[in-house]
Structures are given as structure tokens and as C-alpha cells.
Amino acid sequence: ASEAVIGRPDLAMASDEKPLKYELSKYYMSGIIPMERSKQTLIDASTTQDESETIMRFTKYLDEEGQIPISKTGHTTFIYAIGHGNYLSHHRFAESFTMDLSKCPYLDNDNDNNEESKNDQFRSAWIAHGVFGSLAFVLLFPLSAASAILRKLMPSTWIFFHTFGNIAAFASTLFAVFVAITTTSNSEGEHFVEKHHKIGISLLLLSFCQVIGGLFRPGKSQNDDNNNSKLNTRHIWKLGHGLLGTSILILGYIQVGD
Image (cartoon, rainbow, N blue to C red; front, top):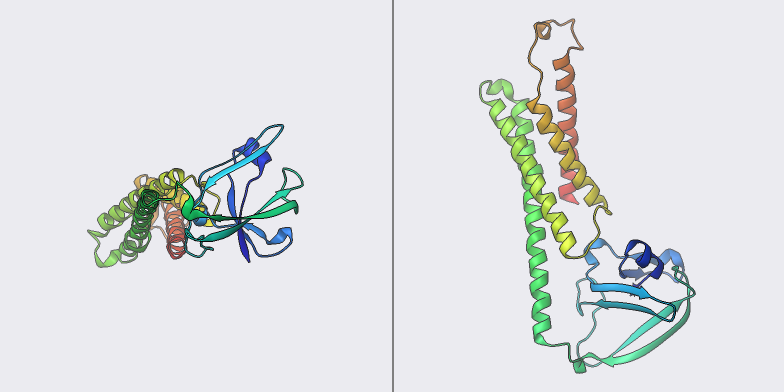
């Protein structure tokens, strides 16, 4: 297995796709797979092309967890390849060259400190994202659900715990999603392409619907105490509210564990 940075000019011009890091696990196309979004850490990456040349630019960290490190001292061999066209396919030309990065004028301690500072900045944001997401789906939403289930034990106060839990959980979810979107943008990542992203935005929408549904809960009618009236408005609302809450709890635990 190896790694590579690949740029695709057609997609760069059509949809502004930037060069990405790929895992090379096989000789064939099926083994050329983009790394997961958290590993796409290239800086100022771009692919440009005109009638005479194609230029791919990017800045890459030398040492990244779980990836092949690049030594900042001594000779390192780099391999590059050129495809048959602007589409991803087997290369028509490949070559290698050796470089000693210790002689690179741009490789200094200030750059190392800037990289570490940038990593720390993103790390802190993702920690905040995880904390507020966990607060919503491990504490607040379960608290809200438990107060409704145990309402007979606290008939006069359960509604306050239930309402506060839902509203606070929605606020925490909104903040967690906001942090994720802004951090992804700042790190030049792509939005809503992974399962975690899609479940997260779905949870935000579902929790919003849950809060709005709670605010517009139908009042009791004279038919609510009639056992023969199974399909009154309040009964239907309670079923929908409960199913929506259960869905949020299940998806929330999946999201936190991801």
C-alpha cells in the first residue's frame, strides 16, 4: 500500500475540485481511493491547465498520523506520474527524483510552529464539536425523554424538564453543526459528503421539528378520555412526537459513537 496526491484538471475546472490525497492499495483503479475527509489536510491545493501545461500545487505536512512520513533531513525519493488524459486512469509516464528537504529555504521552525498552531486551532474546534454533540445526545435528549416516560412520578414538573431538555438539546446540536461547518470551511474541506455529515444535518432538522412540534402541541379535547376515540388529533400528535424522539435518540447514539 502507498499514498499519492492526485489532481484531476477537468473536475478542477468544472467543479473547482482541489487535489486530494489517495490511498493506493491495488495496481488497478479499484485500489485508488480518496482518503477520508479528516486526512485531507493539503494547504492551498489547486490544479490549473492551459493549452501548453498542467500545474498542480499544494503544501503538505511532512509527518501526519497514520500516513507515510516525509523526512525533513536526508535524501527522500519522490515519485510522480502523468495520466493519458484529464481523467483518472493508468499513467502513461512515471519518473522519480531525490530531494534533501533540509536545504529547502521554506522549511524552518517558523513554518513548523505555524502548522502546529493551525492543527491546534482545528483540534480545539473539533473537540468543542464533540462536546456539544455529546451533551445533546448523551445527556439532554435522554433527560427529556426520561422525564416524559416517568411523568407519573412527577406530574407537576416533568413538562419543564421535558421542554428544557428538548430546547437545550436543539441549541447544543445547532452549535455543534455550526462549529463543524465553519471548521470544515476553514480547513478547505467538503461539506455533507460523509455519513457523519449527513446524519448530523438530519439530526439538526429532526430536533428542530421536535421542538416546533412541542410548541404546537394540540390541547386536550373532550374525546381524549373516550377510549373509543383512537384517532383524535392529540393522540396522533403523541404518536408522532414519540416516534420522532425515538428516532433522534437512536441516530444520536449512532452519531456520537461514530
